[in-house]
Image 1 (cartoon, rainbow, N blue to C red):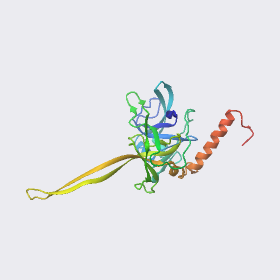
Image 2 (tube, rainbow, N blue to C red):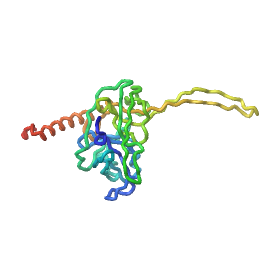
Image 3 (cartoon, rainbow, N blue to C red):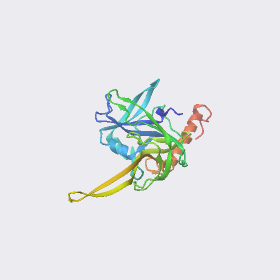
Image 4 (tube, rainbow, N blue to C red):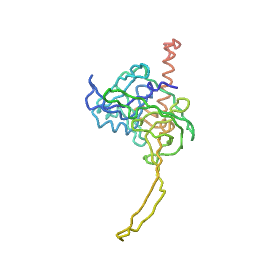
Length: 272
């Protein structure tokens, strides 16, 4: 089991500025690190954030038992409106952004599952739905576990991506969280819910006074969480990253290995 607070982070907003008195008004969604100071969340999360004057990410500062305190790194919304800092990929509901800060050392990046999960495979996610205790400026990280219901396509988006339907609904604020497989590898990203409605009764009744006909319709709805597959995500071309997300992830993985070797003193300083 991973300590998820170092891997997924709340996307927060405020209309009260970004000075030392920064006060959070709401948590809009969740984001996770892909390395190099870059993060991924949903396009609709960033779009909603742009309705506020400043946007930030909450990073864990310290933990005492189950109580975690966070420090927020925030920028004015104009920073996120600049394509050099935040890229919106509307066709797949993706946003990639970087922060103009030194990323805390405890921020970690997970490996990715580059294949597909199958129906009934277990999965889980961690994020920040309905998570702000506004009076105390406190976050409650929440976790959900279930299984894959189906592997299909999201035809409501312009360029239909491959998605998973999940056995659990995804509350508001969970959008942008990663979906993990049983090996704690990123298998996708939560983008919301879909409702499937079927008609179970339809009938007409002639009113007794002869004034018309009354229609009776009864439907039944199934609500399922949905996540874009990791396969779809890593194939996305990103101007901000300078190529496919997959290429960026591979470069970051090599960098982490080299940094580890250097830290252990096993890397020749003269090597490129």
